[in-house]
Amino acid sequence: MLNLEELIYLTKKFRFNNKIYIHPIKYRSMKNPEEGSKKPKNNLLVKVIAIVIAVVVIGVVIAVELPNILPKPAKIQTLAVYPGPSGPNNSDHLLGGCVIAEANTSGLTTNDKLAMDTFIQYMLSPQVQFACEKATGFIPISSSNTSEKVTDLYTGSSPIGITYFTSISPSDYAFTKSMVNAFNSNSTFSNIHVTPTDEGASSIISGVDTAIQSGHTSPIVISIDNLDIGVLAYAHSGSYLVNLNSTGKATALMPTDVIPSIAKLTNYTSTVFSGSIPFITQIINTPLVWVDQTALKAAGINHEPTNYTQLLSDAKTLYGKYHQGMINFQGHGGASTATELYQMFVQFGGNPVTFNSTHDVSAMYYIYNLSKYFSPEYKTSYWASYKGLAANKYTMMDYQWPGSVDLKTVGMNTTQISGNNSVLNVSIKALSEGVFIRDPVPWIAQWQIIMDNVWTKLIVDGHSQNYTTISNALNSANSQMSSYLLTTYNNETLVHDYENGMYKPIIV
Image 1 (cartoon, rainbow, N blue to C red):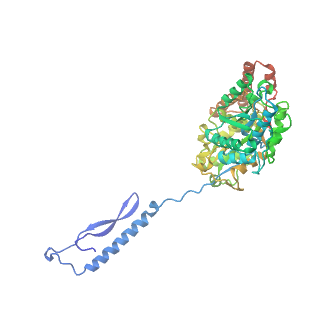
Image 2 (cartoon, rainbow, N blue to C red; image 1 turned 30 degrees about the vertical axis):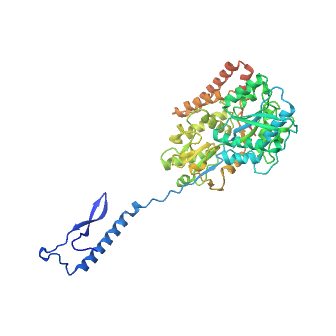
Image 3 (cartoon, one colour; image 1 turned 120 degrees about the vertical axis):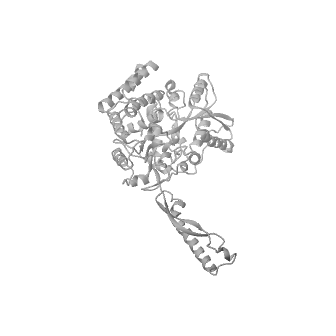
């Protein structure tokens, strides 16, 4: 209980940082010294007054400071993914990921090939493919997860050992190894044993080359990037890889519910390699467009752009709203930038391999106009950098790969304006619109270097370009590629075929 010998708190107002606060000040009791320790008659009244004052003080302070004490409500932000805008000529989507193939080592028997076919059929089966999608994010080549029996095509009694080379990330390889172990422990395939090894693509290529040159006879199956396979697919007129179309078995090795565009692509490959199908798409990664729908709506944009005309218009609108470029492009240079340019050139109807067709020039001119609205992040962005969406660094990430990325770490919500779609379903939708792969020519790395140089000149360092300067730069790139081919391969027929567009995207 309070007494008059204790402090009684009263209040007064004071101002600090433009806020008014209620602050207690100290008053001592006005006791008459001659009264000694006698308590005043109005003791109870004083106590009541003191308590009332204290309650008022506390209440006022809480009312003033409560907005600053409580946590602010979380910002509601919807991040989404969709197939992306289509170009003036098509909406075909670039197909990345790995293909699976058989090395054509010396002395392979029919049983060796049947054993390899059995393992490929297993790795392409829906049960393995959808388990892979769950573990890695790569898209299955099958449109549905059906229970499909894998047939042991090898019926012999002698054990056959297969070396299986992969070139994937360590985390993805852990899953692949578990699937191989499941194959080896399955009594259905008791006479086939697969030994997996994960190596760099260049190491696999040189290893297969050495094995073939040295007369190696053991079966080898390869899972490798669909560009890296080109070194082997084109080597010695295609003799380094087994023709999976020799008996029409390429189609039989794929699942029943294979995505139609993948089946078409596999069959169309035979027109590129003189009737041979040297590889089959195994796991898919197709670039999609990632958007912050909350930021779009705040700028008055209610739908993702469906074509490049709308994209440019929306880019201007976003710039006006946020006072900086909000379209992110993978423009740090190197293979990633060249890959994104490849897709845009194809959608404009061009042949990016030759650089300088009329449609190629139109595509690059469009990209130059769009670059005025690029996010500052574009010079450093890599394929997983759509994390910047959640940080409001940009509103749209133009064409990025979803495979092997944990989307939950970027707060991804795939609820779209048009409905609820998973990344898997969006990818399948994109693939149904049309697909293409880059012709896996063995000199694709040099093409990427030249394309990157064009990008740097026209976009990164360019300030006032027009059709003439852009066209000249692309003509120069074409000449550089021709000179490289002639110097490196000393083959004028190769250069002639290049200039005449023989090498081009494989589109279905």
